Image (cartoon, rainbow, N blue to C red; front, side, top):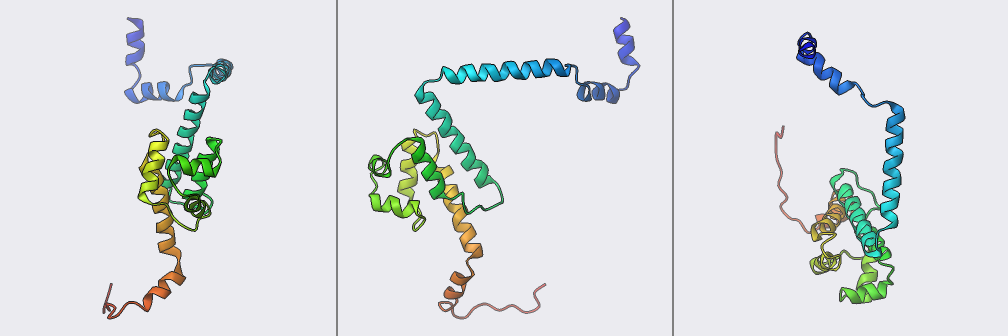
Length: 176
């Protein structure tokens, strides 16, 4: 009964503030809990199979790709090719072995890895299948689209070259 009377003397806003902004756990206990959690994670990592470790790394790569493609910033170091190189490296395979695994000519893979060519839809789907759906085709495809959008927006020279192929360009007067 006494607790109810104590509670009633505070406004709902004051009660919310007390719960939201007051840290009921002392810092020493928080530190101890964080250390226990870190130790538990370390033990769990020790007991993971190679397959589980690889799957975790695949998901990490996928989330890096998805975070990057969701951002508004374009980074020339985060291209389809750079993520594909990371994918191949995770598998501890040579480019030749990897090309064979997805039935792609070595020269085609080399052109893609060296950013002289973008991948086809077939290759993107094969990557999804190869990763056992750990990295969906859409994640790979969004990387390609981000590159294309950047180039389309910023390649002034290309735009200038294309002008010679356009006749009767629209003209507008009094455009607000």
